[in-house]
Length: 463
Image (cartoon, rainbow, N blue to C red; front, side, top):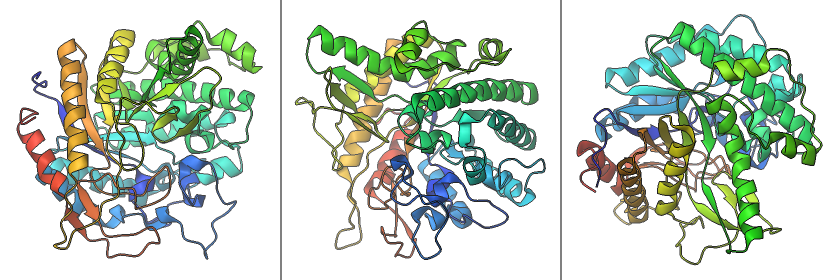
């Protein structure tokens, strides 16, 4: 097994809208996540917030008030870093203001100070399915070019405020899900056509480049990356039609990292846009911005692999593309295929394509965890999943992949983005709350807590 780099960033990852709660406290405005019931990935949302209905994200696990307790547990596991997001609407409640909300800024000051007290580096996503609701309701989301300016103002504000506290940034979470989950990713209705979706993509590419410029201007020693969902897909057979169709499906995801990592649209873009009937409006200077300010590293999520057949049906969820069953793979309790070798393949694919550092910022096992008679949760399947994937990552490093770190998705149970449930749990830490919002919110360690603690303490050698 390869030795992990000395400065390897072991940790965990959450998102503000799935953990913080306090959706309307201390001046925070509503975000698109706040009108969703049943998981933001579904694209189904209410027009406004109905006070008579239950929204899981409104309280979530109350990380907003309990973060000190949770960070102490992360420190006990030995975290070197912790990935979370800044809720844009805590800083600019509508998204289009010129003056930020000081109470929101102070919350993240306090949160980052608490992490740094334990020597835990904050890894911060600027937009994680949390676009301010007003930017959807009044501007139509990212299909409107005005959002570039609003996002840039937000980025400049937080870069200046946290320049001495945060050195690792990411712009948009899983930006390639814009074509799969446009409401979550870009505040664009799921019914939108290809023209609106790809125009929104272009605006986000420009905003990504401007954020990269601002970050380096304000925090010269910072690193800022893009983040994509890159669980992989295999052809279902050796039929050349299946192979070509699978290649086309894969490069629809890699299109996004090509633009943000390499600084230009890929060669197949004109053909793709002709097929889709898309004619982008590109302002003077846009393409030069993309070329001048690419991302420093590629952060990505990996959960599984799937099989694809030409002309076959497939669907999308938060784990990536869901296609045909692979008879060579077992599944999680949630029905997701388990493929650590696919993880190694993806690391090598991305390392070869971009020749820049990789950061695995989401990987984890969602299951149904029930305490036994003594109150213990013996989540052996989660341990086995983690062990096999971390071993595959070590092998990828030995292959020559430059990997900065690994943040397990959901080190503490949070609201599922895919289903809006608490029942689907990823954490090493159990949170006493059910799908209907009942529970004490008490935190308790699962068996996997000690396992991950040992992995970090041994720098992976325990595996």
